[in-house]
Image (cartoon, rainbow, N blue to C red):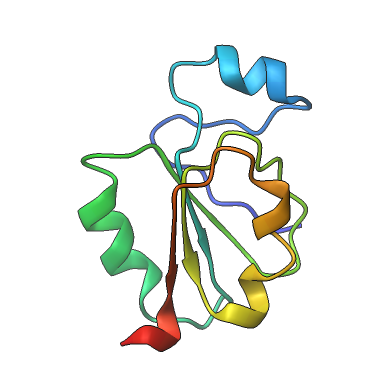
Length: 94
């Protein structure tokens, strides 16, 4: 499992625990280790959202995610697991 820490976020075991934390992730960035773009997105988004970068194959609790960024094949399986999802940005959209 590949998780990156940002703004003090620490993955926990359940939605209730995450929902109670003030720094629950609102933005999930799904990218492989060699992708050049996550750092740029994090530098812009972390000023406004609690953010987390995960590898496409990572297991992550998505119950608090409102915004997701990544390639469509990487996002397809995660989207149905995000009950609070408001926006999906495909990296293929340009």
